[in-house]
Amino acid sequence: MDTPAAAAALAGRVVLVAGAQGGLGSAAALACARAGATAVLLGRKPAKLNRLYDAVAKEGPEPALYPLDLEGASPDDYADLAQRIGDEFGRLDGVLHCAADFAGLTPLSQTDPAAFARAVHVNLTARWWLSQACLPLLAQAPDAALVFAVDDPARVGAAFWGGYGLVQPALAALVGMLHAELGANSPVRVSGLQPGPMRTALRGKAYVEENDRAARDPGAYADACVTLLSPAGAAHRGQVWSVQAGSLKA
Image (cartoon, rainbow, N blue to C red; front, side, top):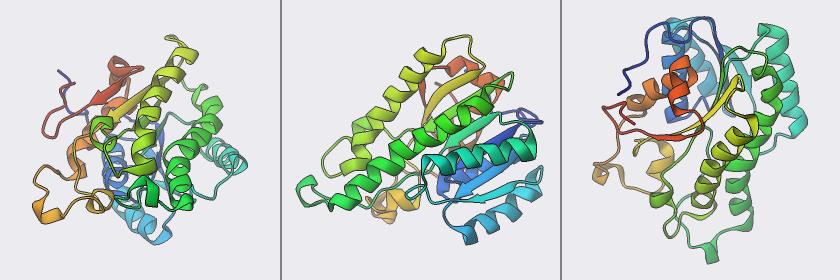
């Protein structure tokens, strides 16, 4: 059984948190700072990022802000991001993918084509473009982690979840595929985190909050994010780790 992330588990590391302004992203960024990491906060809402910046700075090393909308960003934008991180910090030890797009429960036959394409792009394609751009910098670290937040395919693969639901099994497949291609001896570890139901704005588009007794605060899964980004994450290399609130048991 894993134990909660140690206070210095990420000491000296630089971690990029994509979707930092969201529920899981913000909780993870705070936890990373408490664990000693310098967090690069990536998100599309500058006002929320600025508020998060202040909170993260109180918990650990001074973070960095990088406003970017994943929907419109190109591969060149991600390459520029990786270059800037390398120039400023000289290293990158982890990337945590929490950015997500979900417009709400809609029958496929009535889904707006642009909304469907946006969900597939933000939840899958953009995540890969960002990962691909960061891989060379990650590979320079002695121990680096690439972590994808994955929703439960059994739940969101049901009716009405649209493009968001369809890409979750693809994300799980991406974890296994990239792990196999990099090899077990690569300095870059690839893994997924499947948290339990979280009380977030995304989930609020599908469930009425006052009736949603299964959801927990995203902070319940912040230590699991730190674990996967730290050397302890080697135990979950090439796997999607399903975590339940109140327990870090795989």
